[in-house]
Length: 227
Length: 125
Image 1 (tube, each protein chain N blue to C red):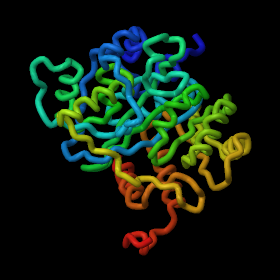
Image 2: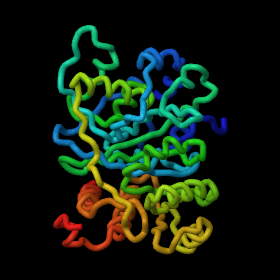
Image 3: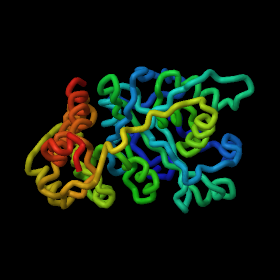
Image 4: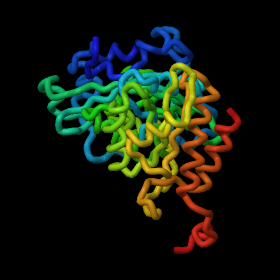
């Protein structure tokens, strides 16, 4: 089966490594600390089968969970259309994982399907997110074009991570990816092996480093709350 | 995989869960808003409400509630609004102003302090 609205992701197919969601019934929730107070978001976006769930799973402290959102053609969450007819609704699944950063901050990583029809979900994922990782497969670069276009539209900063299934890294290849995706020189394009925790962790660190650079130097005036 | 269970639901069940109510323009929740139960479930309470209260003894993100209940995010939001109305839960919202868009690049950028905390947390992984 190639694709359908309710199975947009790559969870079941090519995920030989960590993080494959278990069967229902194997769930054992790991609660957050009582002091947890700030949820933060980073979105991993990319084409079908590129390894989004694998990346989320390799760094997550919990087995990746999956949930769904219902979209209608009008783009509302739920309304009468849902009840009247299921023809006007689309159900979109997305995966997420969790990293407890410290006693207060909890980072949620979302694996988001990169196809056009899921724009309503994207609005929810991107609002207030720290940034995004565009995960690409060099064999299917054009799958990333739409995602990059939308991230730029939403003004969400992102880095590009090339998932090296074969573990081979090469700078010329990264340059070709940058050229093919037409991303600015300032945007990091990095290699990774999404199956490996350390590698996925480094991708997230590259993103945060990039974001820190964008945020610019700490301004004493801003820190003091002056206009 | 567990979410397929939702696909097999009929819209009728979702209608029943929310009593046909819809999420209006009022949507105070983020996907990562942390929900905290403030009371125990009471007898006769709708089962989904009771499960949320049990689940949220420790802070629990909205998406985790959605995944656990196997209900779509927007349906869970309606249930959470009910609990909010009766004081059954409190919500720890994401930091206001965690991102802003007024930088020179026009991009949505988080505050320095937040980024520093995220970096430190990731480095400890």
